[in-house]
Amino acid sequence: MIHFYENFFTSTQCQHFITGHADLFKPHLDNRTFYFRKTEVVELSQYADAPKTKKLNGHLNFTVKQLDEKAYVNYFQIVKWPVGEFQGPHKDMEYHCYSSIIYLNDNFKGGETIIDGTVIKPKSGLMILFEGNNLIHSVTKIEKGIRYTMPCWYTK
Image (cartoon, rainbow, N blue to C red; front, side, top):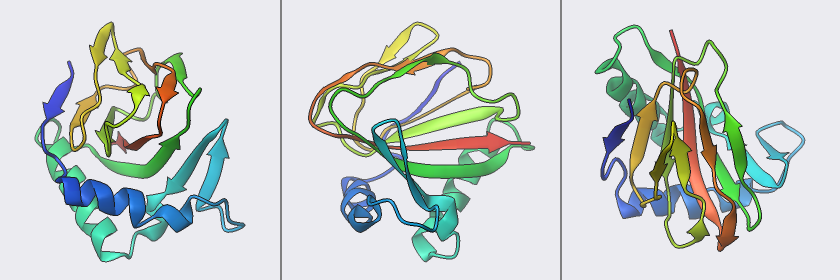
């Protein structure tokens, strides 16, 4: 089952995580930012003491606990997806009982999320939450623009 949370983030919050962390999208030696293929990834869990990160962690935990009181945030990231990038069909690690994706923008072409055959068109501020270790999911190729997402993985 896929859970949809419209307006999980406001447009201002989405912009904060895109532009407010723009300087972090340059790989550093401290392992907070890295490349995964051609995507650039910021490990937000590395900024656990930042007030907005603490607040986000609490909001994510509150949301997942509505489904499963034993689940909690393991880690979350901001991912910058350039043209040509995609993610093939896969399941997440067994210990990640839930996965979520928050779409930070929607001004790009391609980049739809497919979960167990359901195609989800990204919409800025939308969060989807699903059992990532049980459902096959993927991302279609980015055809134009840059896709920004905030994935999160949960454990028990």
